[in-house]
Length: 203
View 1 (spheres, rainbow, N blue to C red):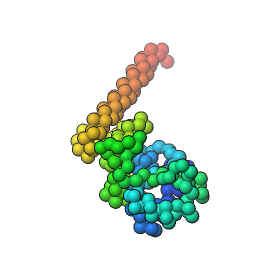
View 2 (spheres, rainbow, N blue to C red):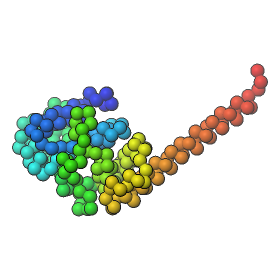
View 3 (cartoon, helix red, strand yellow):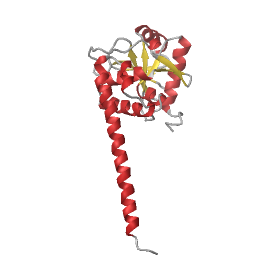
């Protein structure tokens, strides 16, 4: 159901996108749904949107009480009453991961978005950079899979802030280690099959 795009998470994403576009608020889909848009399929229970500070103010004024329900004690989290799915708004100038100031901040959505399937999604390079800056194991795992799917190599590191290039190279090396392990496992299985066949008695 999720990968057919008709589950509650996709419905909420579409609902929010329609409201943002109707209001002319620049946005970019980020997080796991952006990972899916960039061809690494995995499930998620919520949606993340990147807005500027002005965009967040406009969103709250227009939709923050009528169309969507604010989540108590989470000023940038809302619930879609039609589906029960929550979504977070990440704001330009704040910081990924722990939220503590660092060299990589959330960018302006207008500068880092592209259209994928009629929705504005953060670009691949910006998505990877933010996931590296967040420094969470799940985010590193997403980067490994995005590297594999898009066949990225060392040259792609120039797209990132110098503070995260080392982590990008480590994710690249991890991808290669995983692929080498899979190759060894396949070869071992093939040798085992050939060995069993050679020991079978003749008919």
